Image 1 (tube, rainbow, N blue to C red):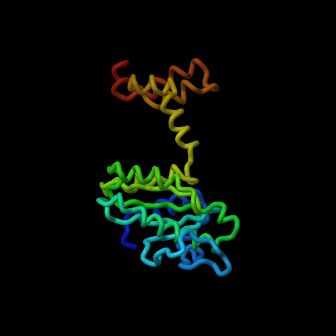
Image 2 (image 1 turned 30 degrees about the horizontal axis):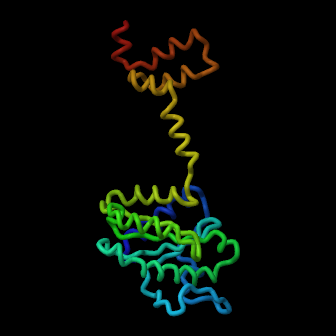
Image 3 (image 1 turned 180 degrees about the horizontal axis):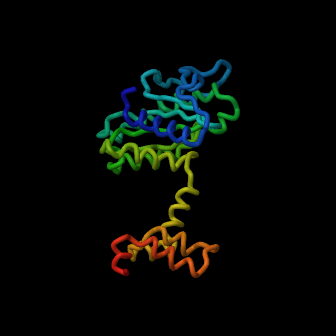
Length: 225
């Protein structure tokens, strides 16, 4: 697949799923179908153009089904991307008819803009508009940065807006950063080991002083002698 953003996002989702020990399948058959399932009448356009040329890839992650679709690679044409959205919705409507009821309830369409679209206001306006579109399924738009070295980081940030978010990790980091004792120790450039000593409820007052001194750098303890 030539679309860099789509592939980066797939790799990020796969890595995250592996870290959680979640079952996942890249490019499962139900998300590869090009036609509506026989007997269904779902459609968004009577004469929609063929979706065969769309750059899409599907992935099952735990109980979720995700179709990742490219909004094109022309970053300079944000005003003409509406038709591409219709093609993406048509594709999503087709594959959705092949999903079981549980996957239909947890079906997402991730739309990926061209590289550099994150820096362009018109693309950000498109993002807001597309995510409010309630047709077919839930949608989220990732606008990749123009700097290739930031793609991985920004794809992780995007995933944190989805069902893959882990807010408790961020809360844990924030709590640690705001801990008053940690702030004081850091400001005074004192050893991090002092935190465990001072917070301990089992160390006697007599031993605390000795342990704090042990935690000092060698050059400081030698001066004391």
